[in-house]
Length: 354
Ligand SMILES: [Zn+2]
Image (cartoon, rainbow, N blue to C red; front, side):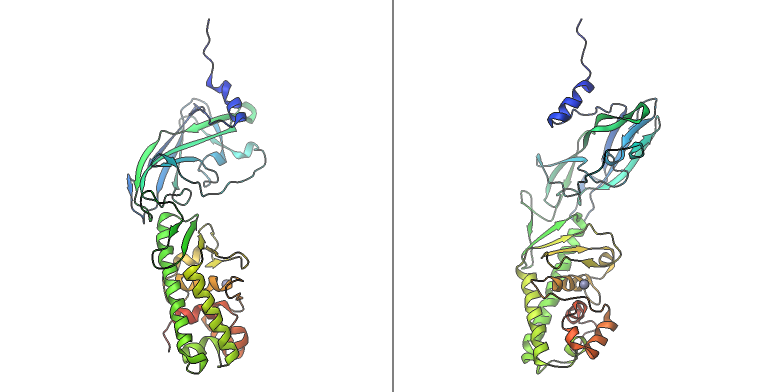
């Protein structure tokens, strides 16, 4: 008599060979995905609800990091655009072997739902039809009796959505910046964040150009007014030359260099960079609460960060804030012309001065 072979018997072999796992082998748990809508605009977050359901009569244990319960830290989805896989942009983590605490318990008949924003995890800034599927497999996805890890796979049915992205259908990211700048690339930024960042880069570039023009028109310092004095202090040809050189370099960076903005930071401050790693800028929480222009704005923050790169102006953070920066200009102008916030406030020019 011919006995049908369980699909489970093949899985360890398939995993060992690196072959794609068979769908829905964790047959006691079902996974479904439901997008927030069918059609997403370029300023919409691409929200998808993932539901894991225990369809069996016994508790089921799933390896946490193959679920979206604690945030997505692995490529848990398959995303196709026009039938082609798109890049996964999220993190991949090296972990130790899982212990009992790494498994999530699902009671019989219960479901666990999480909402995931997909456009910061997958390249979704190109217009087109997308097909999404939850799809993950692991040699220790589920835990059996005694919390013994077992291989398993989870896959949902595919769902189709349409996204109107920043880039036209068929485009190859990274995008070319629209308003006269160089290439602008993003990392871990959702579609709406990319929209807002493109505007912030435009604002930062515009205030840099304005500052540079002010400096160039001032005849090497002879005609500089309160705007210069407030942020860089008493007139001095040597210091004025430093400020001119700095703004020439910041302008050149905004206009010609491949800027990359990373949205993965969750800290309370505005932004940070590694000065030796141009031109990647990491934006954090305070950035998203800032206005586009004006004091401590998004545009000014990008100018500030751009000034830090060694190959740009190599500025430091000697003091923060308008009060500190204007005090520094009065008391120690030699340090003011090396201070990042002084450059930011000079560029923001808020309130405006001549
Ligand atoms: Zn800084």
